[in-house]
Image (cartoon, rainbow, N blue to C red; front, side, top):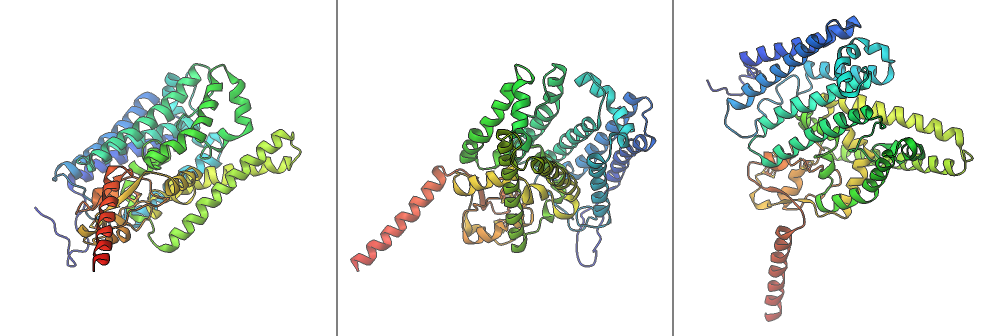
Amino acid sequence: MEESISLATPNPTLTSGKQKIALALAGLGVLLLLVVWAAGNAFAPVPVLSASLGLICAGVWLFVREEYLTRPEGIKNNGVWFKSLSARGIWGWLAAIIITGFYTVLYFFPENWLTGLTALFSPVSQGLRGKPADKWFVYGSLYTLSVLVLGVKFMYKYRHNRYQLIRTVSVMFFQTGFSFLIPAFLQVMNEPEYYFTYFWPLKDYYGSPGAVQYYGHATSLSVYFIAFSALMTFVGTPVLTYFFGKRWYCSWVCGCGGLAETAGDPFRHLSDKSLNAWKIERWMIHSVLVAVVLLTGLLWLNSWQQGGVLGKFSQAYSTAYGYVLGMAFSGVVGVGFYPLMGSRVWCRFGCPQAAILGIFQKKKSKFRITANGGQCISCGNCSTYCEMGIDVRHYAQRGQDVVRASCVGCGICAAVCPRGVLRLEGAGSDIDQRTEQLRTVHIRLEDVKILS
Ligand code: SF4
Ligand code: SF4
């Protein structure tokens, strides 16, 4: 039966019977995890963990099949402003409180607050790393699982769009391989834990004298890690951004972006599109960039002067930076506020890596979103679903290219446009051709003037 949304039916049924069963299955899996967490101990960890994760995966899979495969292809955001979870209703607030609470416990409370969950994940940790789980292993496992399970959901939703499929496989691959498995295997090989997908300034430690000292001497292999880190910061990042824009990192590689694109997808429309938000965003993200540059500079100065310049202060500054930005902002607020402020709170307002990539993208990059303004019907879909709060319609209506520092090149604006107005491009032949055509028209007008 076809469902219609009108003023007479302000609360249409948005979740089918099958979906309610699917939600119950996934909820049961989450409940199992909560019981183990509350009990503080894990009885029969392998069967319990398998049952819990199995129920969650089965529930999500059944839900998304029903949501997307029972309808024709095409992006469905039906009822997004009617659902309590995605419209800052009770479920949205509850989700925000639960995620924020989880991150607060993870970062600011000692290991023994999560003893039940660490015991539950220990057999997996033993298998992968050859040692029992700690709270960071639990976090990494749940994070990777979220990217994978909700990445599959994302692929069902955008299954007709090749760009979305490829970049989602990419973030799933980098999260699983480079942020979860490789760091674990390195430990089995008695190498120091290292994340190949994070560079300075996002990972401020990798640019510090402490890291150079540590990785430079830890093992014969580890010196290459820090060399790779430096190479990516000074060469890889500008070169790749020149050709591809910041999307090569923010939408294809980064773990924070990976979670935002997959788990955060149902909340992307909640980003604030106002000019005020844009102003605040620029102030905040560039302030964080200045803070990390100062921190790194101070640490190097002190290393050179053997603590002679603000020695104690630099240590306190480094600790404060880690707590306030590394934990409270990027973790607690950055993920916990998805259901309230959209999926890219950290990427938009705080990430120093995004700030640097944004500067390159704005000043020196071939990447831009081109707009065929004549086709735009001003529906506003592009602006609504831009997770970075960019008012894309403003540019589209005028036929202007979108060249914004904050754009992560997710491509959703182009995907949801009903008129095919927007295209993600490098400054290759398409743009050059159009510029050339405009120039030709201009020259002919000039000719007309001279002749008359
Ligand atoms: S402008 Fe388009 S590509 Fe850029 S962040 Fe917004 S939705 Fe994504
Ligand atoms: S989604 Fe397409 S048609 Fe609608 S406002 Fe944006 S560019 Fe115009």
